[in-house]
Length: 151
Image 1: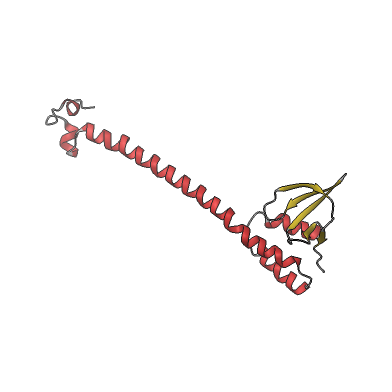
Image 2: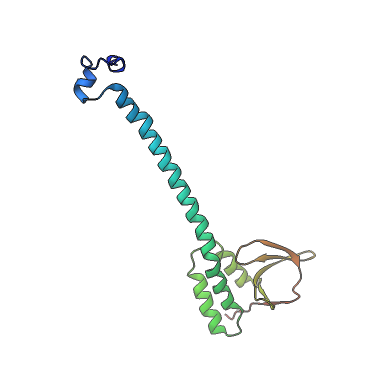
């Protein structure tokens, strides 16, 4: 290591003669500046990914709600189209909804047509929102209608 570059006498330093830079300048560039830039870019990319994931969650709710709304009609051809639309959505909430539909646990409220997943318990049913998966507590089937599909 050549210390002349740090003392200001860079003419005799072999490193300075080869590179044209003093060791202090090179140290600052390689370690301080580059690492700061890398850390800053890493933080920026991490925030961008988190923002994109939050945006995906917010964007999928209306699409999923619209597909589920198609299941609340009486026409089986419209239900078939709604199931195809639901299957085309690439989101983790689709699988539990499809399973509940096949198991006969998918219901909708007669007022408001909110689609719900009901799971049998000892004292009634556990009620979950089909779009968000949030628990809505427990209750019974009063005011709800089962979403029926044909084979």
